[in-house]
Amino acid sequence: MRVEGVATPGLVGRVVTEADRFDRYRADTDGDGDLDTVDHPDFGRIELVFKNVLIEWRPFRALGFRAGLIPDAYIPAAEDAWTMRFVERVAAHRNGFMPNEADTGAAVFGDLPGGYGSYEAQVSNGEGYLRAEENRHKAGQARLTLRPFPGSAGAGGLRLTGAARYVTNDNPPGPDLDRRVSAVGLVSYDREGFRTDASVFGRWSYFREGGDPFVSRGASAYVSWLSQFSVGPFARYDIVDPNASQDHAEVSLWNSRIGADDVPADEDINHFIWAGLLFRPTPRFDAAIWYYGRFLDEQYQGGSSGGERIDPEQQAWAGMRLSF
Figure: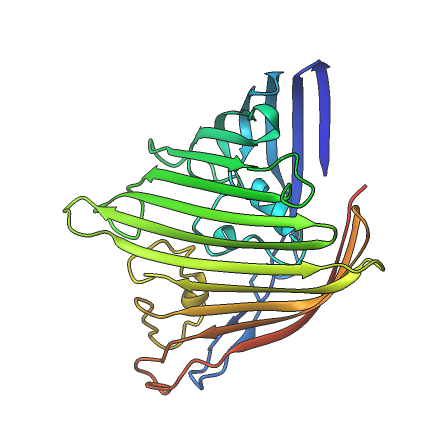
């Protein structure tokens, strides 16, 4: 739910809420190599949370300010290219490289002259919108989106986006962790029902004792096409190489949930696939059916399944989005 109030031209107050549902997850609970469905202790409970509570002042198209519980600098721009949040989140966010959709902080933003793109820079707590401030450390983030050919009929839909995030941290996974740097590059294009994008992203974790950083990296590609009847296929592929033994828990979430056997996650590769059929008769309504697959280039270590390859997870889904 989104509510806005306009005090004077250019000055906006905004409140956005989101319903978070506690869901099931998949884990190897008996060590037989198969992923079993596990209920969260609060499975089925829906919790309404505040996602954005902010004041925004934009005296010029090229310069605006917002403060409060503000949206992430990168994720909304990436979702403009992806357009199917109801199927899955954008790759850099889903895989933990740009982890916070919103956070408490302040931002400066604006459009580039001539329709050549936009920018945003922000400073925030680094805790996200579901947790309060935990320490004195902060996060900084910046994004730049370029439209090289804004007036072109053929190339006007080309966008180049780059974003970076810097956060100092003394939280787990270890007391010696000093800072993390995340970066993402996105190329997207859309024209007359055809959409595609490709992104690469990485995270570097630095420790106080020095030495080389621990590195996690990934990439994603997506394509969709809608016919004159507003229906068409789509497909997306993510590949992620997390250094999960030392990196952030959000990057290694799927490994931590396997659970029963000791699964290393240092040099493994994770593959994710979505493919299906999209129906979009109006910009305010989407419906889709799709296949989801998760494949891990990894074997169990120890336990009854030691040396065996982790079984893939494959599912069929249907979903819809309605805005009004």
